[in-house]
Image 1 (cartoon, rainbow, N blue to C red):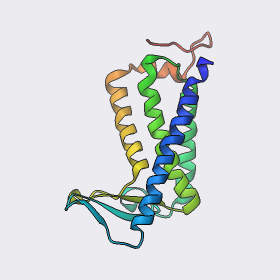
Image 2 (image 1 turned 60 degrees about the vertical axis):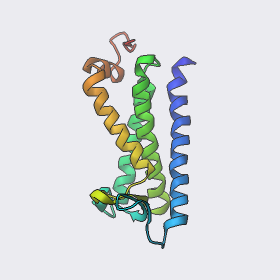
Image 3 (image 1 turned 30 degrees about the vertical axis):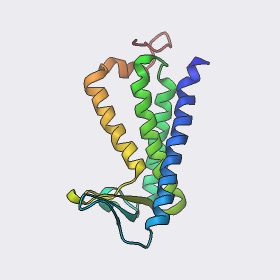
Amino acid sequence: MKKYYNIIIFAISVFVLASLDQISKILATNALKGNLSIPIWNDVLEFYYLENTGTAWGLFGGARVFFILTTAIVFLFIVFFICKLPFTKRNIPLLLNAILLGAGAVGNFIDRVFLGYVRDFIYFKVINFPVFNVADIYITVGIGLFAILIFFVYKDEELTSIIKPQKDGGTKTYE
């Protein structure tokens, strides 16, 4: 049973976090669509509704099929990685990272499939940062965490051994 812990934890966590993302988008849509922005911190942070068919700054707008396929492939890779990841205390940061990336991918995937665009509503006005949403926060934190993990925490052979099984068919674990 222990070998299924990662996938169970991953599935439940991604469901909960993606649900929170969707709830935040529903609330933002109901409060903001067709209205002006709502300042949270004057001239710094505001809620501002935007329907985004592209990526950050609206780049690659209208490439819905590309984004759906890319997200599906990335999500399948994350699931593959989770299935290969030994359930150890040492690998908890990698599991958390996969949960964040998976939840962000699913949150925006749902919007793209069912709406044809992603609902963004958080805007850092002071630096004119692209309008984003909760799923984007999951993805950004996940990518940042992954960079920290691969540069400062895990050795190359640790990460490689997760994907490539040992000659005896097992996976080498690091405690």
